[in-house]
Image (cartoon, rainbow, N blue to C red; front, top):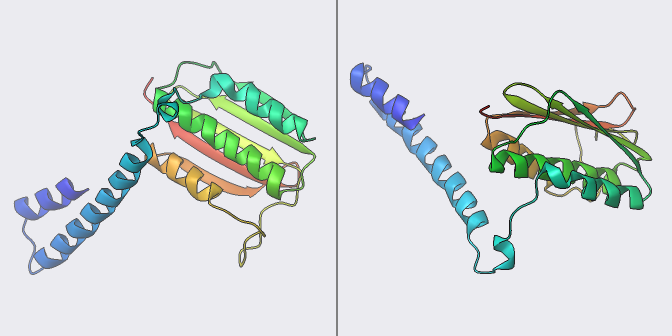
Length: 183
């Protein structure tokens, strides 16, 4: 974005809007530096344990089993042909499902959850639907609300994906995340 804005101003200078363009470039640069700082902070670690390989969708059954042990009926549906994902997308997909299931256990009062993994040629769509209390009202948050959805939103945005939430066909909460990837 910064390069495009600077290049556009250089090629076709606007009348008096150079200041606005520079302010926009500065804002974009600060946002990018902030995001980079957060990513680097996540990657920094002196602990050997934290350098262990991160989980991916191949370990999804472990999380599903823990949720079942908590008394929730969890079904996993796979549509399309699963394939090897880039490591960063694989970890993010796993963490998104893990957080959505954690939210179902902690906040939704669900008895049933459905996880759908829909494999498309250049994207993985993840849907987690429950039969719990549903989405919070527009004006408020559920009691005990944390940073789970914020983290999911950041993971999805990292890949230029799309996140949507709302009411599920099971009557509760629905989270849909679409993560694009290179085939």
